[in-house]
Image 1 (cartoon, rainbow, N blue to C red):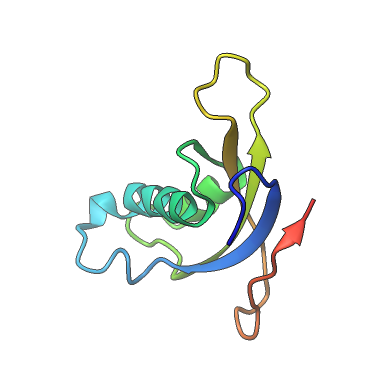
Image 2: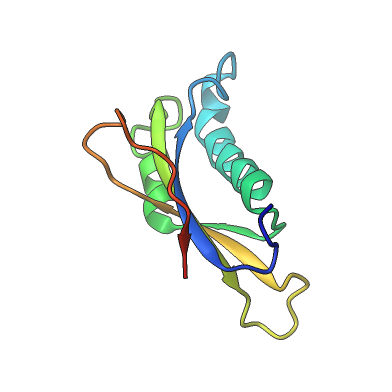
Length: 111
């Protein structure tokens, strides 16, 4: 089992289309952002999830209704430097740009 206090990062491929199936057009990009946050919360077990600006622009890049089908995301669990923060750790979601999604796996990398 993974220790909750351990700081590490790992790349994942998220398939957004199955999470957005049947959603109305004007809610697709906001829903994709919240699904990335929900996915990161589930994997990393932190309540505080932050999305990188590049990843946000990638999700919104084709407009509100044409969200990319697949997204490669690096989830990094980091320590919170803010003293008044409720959570000790937070998750940073960043975009990993790949040419193809074929054959890319999940690697857990220790810091």
